[in-house]
Image (tube, rainbow, N blue to C red):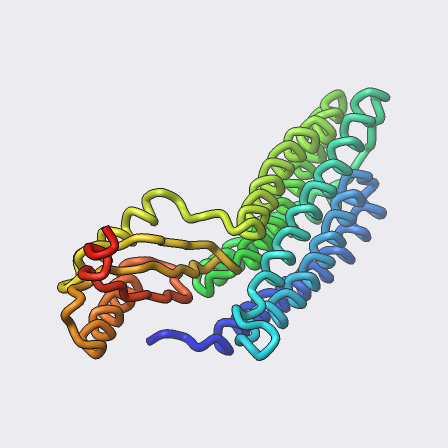
Amino acid sequence: MLESRTDLAKAGRSVTLVGVLVNAFLILLKFLAGIFGHSQALVADAVHSVSDLFTDFVVLLGLKIGRKAPDERHHFGHARIETMASSIVGLALIATALYLGIKAAWNIYHHIEYHPTWLALAGAGVSIALKESLYHYTVRTGRRIKSTAIIANAWHQRSDALSSVAVLLGVAGARIKPSWQILDSLAALCVSFFIIKVGLEILWGALREFIDTAPQPEILSKIRKCTLSVDGVIDMHDLRARTSGGLYQMELHIVVDGRLTVTDGHRIAKAVESCLAEEVVDLERIIVHVDPAMEEKEAE
């Protein structure tokens, strides 16, 4: 059974609100564990969680507006608001990664060392467990409701888990062997590059939507194959397709026998729509124009 637009929006809001609660808890936990556990890396990781909390509110706003149905002033809906929210998450990822990377490089260059305790190690471990679980929950929901903003936010949750891994490695190394304290900064520097890569991918995906980039060639090929397989379709042309809010919107022209009645032409067009709805995943809207074959021949 297909979920309604309202149900999908509720699912998106629910998973994001869970993220808000988890991030608020982790901010407090990592700040306290970092201060009392003498770990500057964990305090910096708490700042990363603050950025997660910010993006959670951005996604909530994007879902509230972006999942609204079309109205008199917005004939194609509001999905681009969700795309904009996704791009903000991507920018936040890149900014956070640059902050963590520059800080780590600074510590390496100046040979800054810390002496963290087991409290900091425990704080990092709890953060990893919670954020990785939140990532899987969020990304599954995002894929189910076809939300690019939710999926982007899931990767932001994972970036926090990865930064906590860096803290865990650094603290554990320092506890095992004091001369390994630089591991904290080295691991954080490596993780920052990974986070930047994810942020750029999210930002590029949002940009492709903003400029109405066509779907991948395999999707266009599937559309053509499905359309031409419908009984009564002689040919197709003028296919236009784009992605908005993670869903496909398209229009195309089919050529049918010009001697058919309007009713028959309409029936064939509906058959094409049904075929595409079944074969193309994430299809939101399809408009099929019917052209008569006889008129094309006369024009030639």
